[in-house]
Image (cartoon, one colour):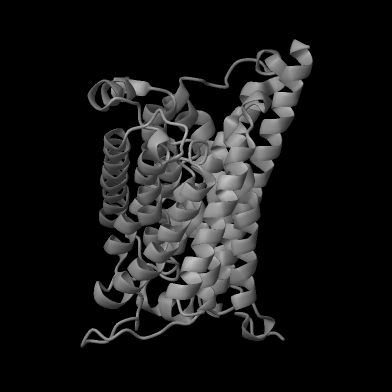
Length: 402
């Protein structure tokens, strides 16, 4: 029976890892559909190579920092418990690799390729696992301090803060250091619209992310005995709430509509195992509205050229999710209890701080050392031809061949 349970857990976590791996295709197509045509190939290549770089960084450095576990022993030792430790690494790697995938959408169309790979290695190898280990492995005694100070440990079941807020706030640092795309704002500050290049690809990316998210959230139990339909239904309700709020506030704009479910899902991650479905619906409604409002604010008034709106979507909606778990997760509002608002606020602020500091250090150092922005000529030509020497459409290949 123990062997059967172990094998079942391995399969359960492996399926979760595969579902979250598939989400990276969603990140890719969401970016492909949003950027201009001259940067579509670059979007696809970045997500694939960033995932590969993340794997190396997390395997050799990051996972050990977070959990104190390495993989340099023999294969026989690694295969214990049907290789559960290996598939757990695979599952958590897909979370870690979401950090550069999130950042990619914010810095699109003007970031150098190789410096971004170096940033990916540093973020996934050092910055992300530092905070991941604090929250999910109790490192440095921070969780014990939060519990002693605020009545409960910081609760983040599936990564509203650990993954999404971290990625979004790191992206904000990178976007600020990069500056706006050429021609995005006129000298008098007026916004020049760069409409999405392909709404069907944008929608495809959003749908892939939405479907994969149920592996992201439900499989965060990491064992069959921990699975609960509450997480699935809460994810569903938050997704629906985010979609409808974005539809109304975004005035039927398809870009907002397809990012709305993602906003709701980002926000519900932290408390998806605690909330009543009505609390999850409310969390999603707030997240969808928050995304539309802050995306418009950052682009139009604050002149922050965050191409996919990853700071509003992941950074701000993720922070809202961490706090929402301390509201709708309480027994007084129909939740499971075991959380406090103060503990959730403290953990959320800590995650935002680590992400901002880490993001400015990594991208600031790279900017000073090698530069992180493409030349004006390359940016005008587009990353596809400048970096990869081929475009998404044969008629505009570098060689000129049809």
